Length: 324
Ligand SMILES: NC(=O)c1ccc[n+]([C@@H]2O[C@H](COP(=O)([O-])OP(=O)(O)OC[C@H]3O[C@@H](n4cnc5c(N)ncnc54)[C@H](OP(=O)(O)O)[C@@H]3O)[C@@H](O)[C@H]2O)c1
Image (cartoon, rainbow, N blue to C red; front, side, top):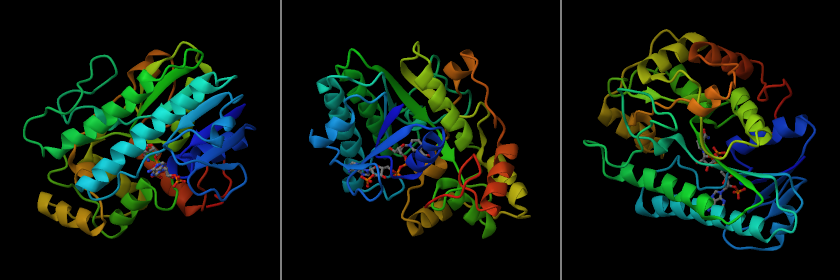
């Protein structure tokens, strides 16, 4: 198949690029800074020559969006919103204008759409969307608004010949340098992998191998449209999540951190505490119902697999070294 990946130069793009190329597909990446063979320049905002890459392709997987790992200043929040909504709108316009539109458009979304809650897991049918939870910082609602607007931009696209799926993905755990697992492992090695603010908040995650398999599954299932949760079936409290990571890496202790210590840490890492403190309890209702079987359903085993691959210098699931 010919698979076009707008925004495919980041962490998730690297995972998909390697796996889909290894599986024999032709992968084309749309980027603002083309460097590799198969890269096509676009600006993520307006139709241009790049749209020809989509015409005659089989699948589009749009990952573009300003990184959320930053301080949530007004300017950054606006850039997070605009880069997602604009790129999704223009991908829709390119598909609508194509003579031979792709069969399916997988659009990245996020598990952050769901409410900060502890009491029950969120699936696609009974899950509660966030934005009105009491006792959380006001700006958390804006992350939900970004996610909602992002999905709406895909919903509103008029692409009658192209199936549309929104990927409500949890954190994708891979051994890549600079990815979220790498950062967590680094904190654990420094002895900082303890509970944060009590550690009762849930962490939703998905192993990179299962992420790729779920994407392949959704490409192949013509009956799937709309939002789909991409998360392992067993989210767990942050305290237990970090304990399992320390066990996998052989780090005996992890210092607990209070909320204000998390603030300081997030500030030092130029990140935001929402990423640490929001309880994300998300489960893959639709995938499980359709019979999708996770290779790595439990975090302790998944963490051990990832640590093994970090030690072996392997970033891809199929064993080859990453080109970076
Ligand atoms: N990583 C995760 O675990 C995870 C989980 C759930 C959802 N997501 C979402 O999935 C997407 C991909 O994640 P990722 O971790 O691979 O992100 P990433 O590493 O930040 O990559 C996203 C890509 O988007 C492009 N981009 C950034 N700002 C842009 C802008 N203003 N206009 C157009 N393109 C822009 C960049 O490509 P160029 O600079 O090459 O143009 C960048 O490589 C993101 O939207 C993220 O929010 C990620």
